Image (cartoon, rainbow over all chains, first blue to last red; front, side):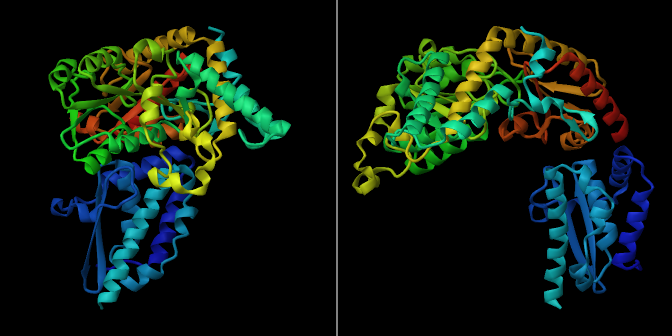
Length: 142
Length: 404
């Protein structure tokens, strides 16, 4: 799978969010992303893949293919699915070391943090942390 | 009741804007808002009376002690308690339950049984599980029924000679169900079983006389009834509190030098070791005054009117399913909208400035009973209005469109 660099994808997302005038458009976009998140293999809907710290259940699975990490995820809440969908578009298909070193300021730039409750913001941080933990784990195996 | 819009002026936070909209505060079962009367009492304490209680001979200490003890009297009178020393100040309901659960360790044996209901808050489950783990006693559960009520017939059959304690809430925090505590207490006493009532959700909505219902232990929190956070009280019949060992320290503390102060041995000080939340206790007393000034009959009438209005409007909203609405209840409504996750609904409502609680509400067994991940919980207070309920319905309809 060929994807752009983490930074260029992040910039695309920032540009995308710049189009939105108000919170409801941002939320609608997240909801639509959530609905379009590719089907998650139900075998991976297990305790070990649960991201701790989210109010809804979020499952995150990672596997390494050709030195790149492929992330898949699922949630029982649609907005969480939308948020994880953004993170997957940024990090899935990237090399572990690039994921580890990635800056995360795009989350602030898209202005989403202001529209997430503290509980949800913590959930988002937990997702990012889990993505990075997988990257660290795969990197150390090399 | 005084006009609700006049009452709202007593609460500075209610004029706040959230995400550009007027705040609609429907999370009162978690924490009620604080009126200026209470805030001012706390400020006044720090500006004029701040000092430690029960110790100093100086005037400030005497002032602070008088105010602190006058709060105890207010609580004693309000809850119909015989003796003021039966009121123990705590950091809240959870603390009160833990004082009892850890104190009972020496009184409970491996053949004993303890009973909770299926609709308890986790804080009225976990301490008893810990007690059972330590003593080998058995924890049994009164089942609930589909309509959100306790199965009282099942409870009657559970009572036997081994049942030493029953722990139930007065009102379910997730469903709003008012439980028949007088009946539960009478049945238990006939069986020589003691009862602790978790009053966290009941105390804010109606007046209760603890001597009349003859309960053995009762716990509540100030922040549910317009008081500050981090303060509450434990009531216990004096003969029971006398038997209960101190919560902090335990038996070994007797040999330590700090035990030289004999007042620790007397009620209520035995359970109030260390500097308490003095300003919180004073604020608690002020909150009791404030609510009595509004009048609990008025509070109940207004809240029941809001409950009926909100239930009717929600029932007419497509996709809404309410849990436990067929029973005698307070102004709490737990519901879901179609198959949408409650956290999605809660997040969207927040964007409209509407504060609700979503999730399991620390009552996982209830959610397991209904086989749902959680609910959206709207909890109404005497300062809420019908037009706020209209805003909620509008926002729910918009959320429904957004989520598709």
